[in-house]
Amino acid sequence: MNASAAGHRRGFRRSAPRVAGKRILITGAARGIGAALARQLHHHGARVALLGIEETLLAQVAADCGDAPWRYCDIGDPAQVQRVVNSLTAELGGLDAVVCNAGIARQLSLLSGDPTVLEETLTVNVLGVYYTLRAAGPHLAHRDGYVLLISSLAAAIHLPLAGAYSASKAAVEALGDTLRIELRHTGARVGMAYFAELDTEMTSRGFGTEAARSILGRSTVSGIAPLGPAIDACERALARRSRRIVSPYWVSMVLWCRPLAQLLVDYSLRGGVAGGLEIARTEPTGFTTEQPARPRRMRKLA
Image (cartoon, rainbow, N blue to C red; front, side, top):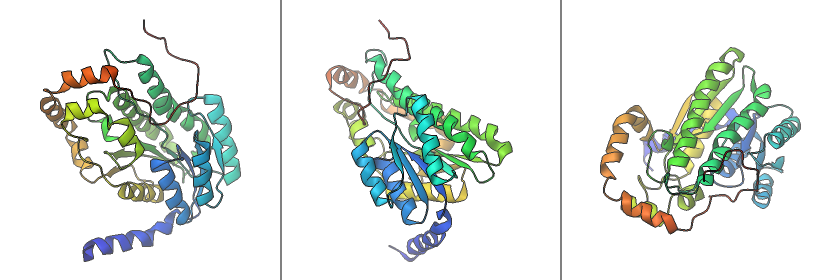
């Protein structure tokens, strides 16, 4: 590490205690971004509460966070979300921030794929965020309140077979932009996180498929980025109540010129899509996190 980088890291570590004492609720905290963020925030003095559906993993993360309060919660069940958020907020003695991180992914061919993939993705990634915001909002509508929504570069750049995930993250972006305006009079702020392909199971299980490799001509679009810088960015956002964060750094440039970036994607992938779609017809895939049975809220297609 050069002197400049070392100085940057030392400077960040000096500012890290700014999250100390903050009461932060994290959804989807059993693994990936949620688990890593919970552990880092706890290490720097924040008080965290965790929710998710993988109870064994959640309990392990909670134990690593000083026996932090945690609950099983199906993010797609509005009544359950309301009950769990209220319960965890009461245990924390109030709420300063919520990190809407819970999400799933699965490849989908829009014309020939299973429509329940889109339904389930929207249930968790969009409705789950809305239910969380609705439940946590009254506790956060104060001058120190903060909402951090985990969106994705996929909200801006749309790839074949990732339409369900991209649609869900674009919807999260829209919810965040709207909520920012609606909360402004309370003093609370809203931040949006745009991440590329990070070193998590979401990337490897959700997008590392044979069909995707056939279309891309390689395993990933941009290469797997380390998780650490994204977690650092989330912590800084929670300390500063930032409007937008990205990881890796170049994501900000792609967001700035997103129409051009989409044109480049359209042009560069024009040759391999047919073969990839054919592979996707029979390739066995599942959601990145197995979902509980829940009633279908959308009309199934014939």
